[in-house]
Image 1: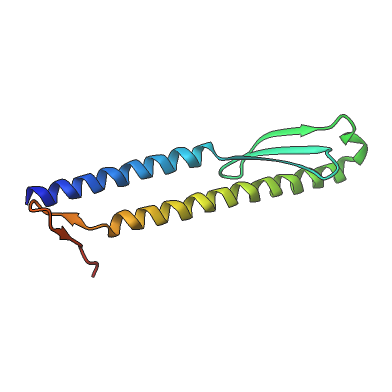
Image 2 (image 1 turned 45 degrees about the horizontal axis):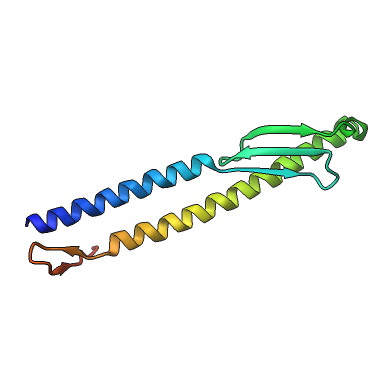
Length: 118
């Protein structure tokens, strides 16, 4: 029984480490997008929250309404890039977690045991 318990604990440690790595990667996601006319640049974090806004020296010439629309549009584009990165990481995490979950455990006599899900 000790071998199976050790094998299970080793799997749990790998899963914990994977969750921690996923959290660190998600915390580090950011995206910066510039408008086509280069008047606005927006940076967002992995949750799509704006963390930076840059306006060109001529941005004010667009007028308040047009500039506001451009800021919102550019922020939306940056959030979409961050969401794509988040989705990629989530897919990679799910695949690796599934592989760990499906990996056979090893008994004390080195025979494999594959738990089944009901």
